Amino acid sequence: MPRMGELERQDLNMLAMYCLRVAQSAAADPWQAEQAKQLKAQWALFIGHTHPPIPGLNSKEDILAYGKELKRRMVSFLAGCPMSLFLPDQTAVAANSKTSHATAGRGK
View 1 (cartoon, helix red, strand yellow):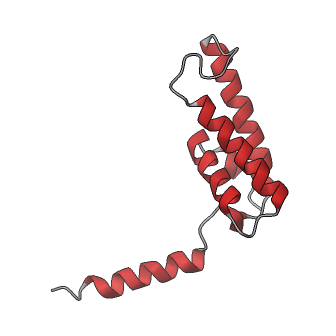
View 2: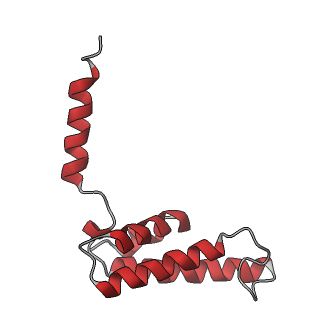
């Protein structure tokens, strides 16, 4: 499980991407997938190009407060998920990196 501090340092866009990965993960249980999908949808509404982005968010202070609350909920949710649900498999990343390096010189 990731540490809260590591997740808290991420911006809202990265947290939304992590939620999307959990929602799409075959390894996520149905509750995790649904929660992740809801958080991702709330993020999409929040960054939407309508003004206000969400009804009731009329002032800059309201928008900032909602963003902080959404981030808090995302961090709390993701902290309870195994990292394997939202971070790339490090062995696959390492293998891809080695393959890229090995084939890089073949076209000369």
